[in-house]
Each structure stands twice: as structure tokens, then as C-alpha cells.
Amino acid sequence: MQIKIAKDYAEMSRLAADMVSRLVESKPNAVLGLATGSTPLGLYEELVKRHRAGLDFSQVTTFNLDEYYGLDGDHPASYNYYMWEQLFSKINIAKERVNIPNGAAADPEEECRRYEARIAAAGGIDLQILGIGHNAHIGFNEPGTPFGTTTSLVKLAPATIKANARFFEREEDVPREAISMGIKSIMQSRSIVLLANGEGKADAVAAAIQGPVTEEVPASVLQLHPDCTFILDEAAARKLTS
Image 1 (cartoon, one colour):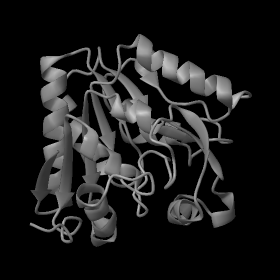
Image 2 (image 1 turned 120 degrees about the vertical axis):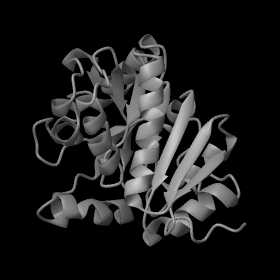
Image 3 (image 1 turned 180 degrees about the vertical axis):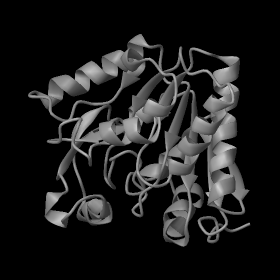
Image 4 (image 1 turned 120 degrees about the horizontal axis):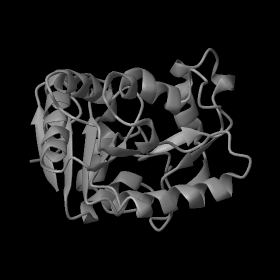
């Protein structure tokens, strides 16, 4: 595991964009795993700037980590909407190469199987971007999720619902379930980059990096990955011991 500590959010975002850019330049048909939420917004802004400077996404394939179950893709709080607003509409990615779980699927179990099959058919994920929840969840894999899970319909923890309420008019509007890549799905990615900023993530980051590997701290499984990088700002790294 590599740990890079940036002085602030902007530098964290640039360092992450450097890694994505190098991959896309060296492998134009790279497969990227993408995350949502507030943490990767700076990364996506950087990638848009680099696309305008010549970075080509025309052969890139993407898979998003998760989507709320029960929201149509054009719902303003859906992750499909978020990705098109923040990144896809601003770069030259082919629409057919964008993969996001269908939160409106009539049969969510079949949707989960289909999603896993599409990842496999693409040859697996070259680089997976992750954030981390205050309870150390990755994707929507909450504490207690078995490490062997693949893409599945999951129930959101109360703390996650509360944290995500800022994206909705009311907390009651936050979906209680989501379709999420499983921990096994994430761990099969060839490289992983986890981004964390802010003092509020410091406990989760320290537990993930320096605590025991346990299903009660989902991100701790990343200690077992052969090519994982944590990019942190100083606030998120402040509880790491030297």
C-alpha cells in the first residue's frame, strides 16, 4: 500500500488525475472504475481540464461503483445524473462505454449479475477510484459486509443515509437500498486509488490503513491488495502514526 499526503484538496485531486491520465495515455482503451460523492469532484474537474488539453477518452470504458435503488437515471440525485453532469458530458467518452447500475431495474438481482458479467466482458477494471465513508465503507459496502461479496443489492446504514441526506431535499427522501459493486469486485481491480479529505475522514482512514483487517472496517481489506494507493490531504491523514 502506498500513501501519498497532499497539502490540500486541490493537490489531492491533481495527484489522482495524474494517475488516471498516465493510465489513459499509456492504455487508451483503459477500463476505469469511478466513484461519486463530493470527494472525487476535484478529480473530475482536473480530468475535464486535461481532456480540453488533449487527453482522449474515446476508447475508455467506465464502470461506476454504485447507484441508489429506486431512482431512475434522470433523477437529479441519481449517480447516473451526477456522472453525466460532472464528467461524461464534458469529455469525449462514448455513451455505450459508460456503465452504471440501473437503479430502476425491475429485477435487481438480475441487474447485479448483468453488471458483473459486463465487467468481466470488458476484461476487468484497470484502475478503481474509491472514496471512504465515515464508517469506512467503500462503495456502499457497509461494516459487516463479507469480503467475498460481488455486485449486490445492499441496505444502507443509518449513518450513510444521514451523511447523504445533503444531496436530497429531506432525509426521508434518501433511498434505503443501493446496487453496489461488492468488496470482491473492487479487490479484483488491477489498481486501486482511494481518496480522502477532511478531518472527518481521519478516523476511518487510520482504521483502514493501520487497524486490523476486519469486515467491520470494510476499507481495511485494501491492505491485502497488491497495488493500492491512498491519496489523502493533511487533515484526513492526521491520525496516522509514523
